[in-house]
Length: 88
Image (tube, rainbow, N blue to C red; front, side):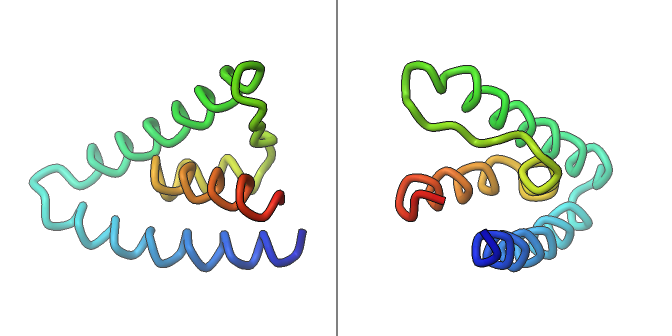
């Protein structure tokens, strides 16, 4: 579990920096950041709601909530990729 947390933390930090740079270049940076966070949390919810059909579950805890809020949909996709490929 330690490698998963380390990989996710590095990925989230890198993505958050890029997202912050992108958001600051838009006319409404706060709205852009909030929309990205809400879409990430909604994607996490959708993954868990469809877990009965897909068999893939992302546990809802502090790490997954922080990753999906900070990184948005790409963060949820990264967690799904790690879950499917590495079985973490």
